[in-house]
Amino acid sequence: MKEHSGNFSKILTTTIIVLLVAAAVTAALGKNIFVDFYTWISAPFQQTAVSQSSGGESEKSREELINENKALQEEINDLVSQVIDYDDLKKENEILRKYYGIKDDNPDYEIAVATVIRRDPNDDFYGFTIDKGSRNGVSVNDPVITTNGLVGWISEVNVTTSKVTTLLSPEAKVGAMDQKSRDSGIATGHIKLCDDGLLELSVISADNKIKTNDIVITTGVGGVYPPDIVIGKVTQLGYDDYDTTPYAVIKPYEDLKSVEDVVVITKFEGQGVVEEAADTSSDKSSDSDKASDSDK
Image 1: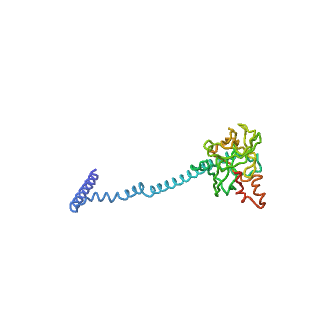
Image 2: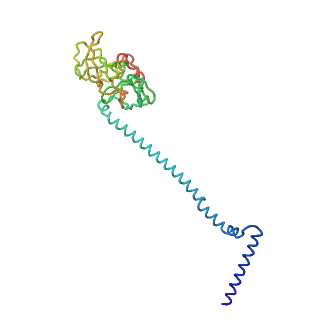
Image 3: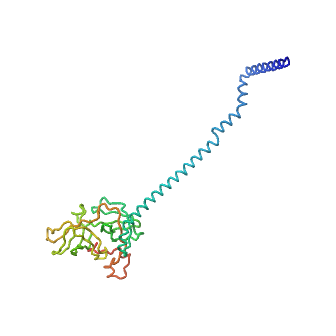
């Protein structure tokens, strides 16, 4: 017991001496050696802690997150693109189904199904641009139709687009016939009728038997339009104010001012026969100018 007490006394005495010396050194140097000692001892632990909390692993995780986010964005873009492609394909298939009957009923037709992509606000006769052009086999003067009837013709062609001039234009001169009475004439646009979406059937005989509600179709004369394409319905009969010649007003079955999808007939039996009769060496390229002034 005395031995333990002696040892304790020695330890206590030594500790007091060390503290006194340390205090003296601190006073002489003006530095707290206890703080320096603590800093020296704890520095490695502090560095390790900093490294673990804000060092390499954190930076690496941030970079990984950025890369993952970029990869996810690319996947989203791919999915959006697939959805757009799917919608376009779905719409195209719906349009093809809609116009399948035209090809089925007219096996001699070669057609290009097209969508209206632009309308010219300065066109008084409601012409428009479609998304098919020369690379799709479209040529100037090719007839344009829908399942409801005749729309007009191709008046300009580029590689991927084409301009359509509608029947409402005074340039339109279509060989036409009353389906019931078989009276024939020329269907054409008229400035006084275009805003109402109507056509005029002129150059008809004085003793014609045309009646209102009769259906008017193409004759096929001139080689520009196939025969038997519906143009519209007779809504009015009258006489010219100047020379009392008869005429009929036709309302097209298709709304030419707001049509969205059309079919271009790029080839049909009897196409361009007028030019071919004059020059048997003509082909599809010359047929692009196949319309005569009397049949547009």
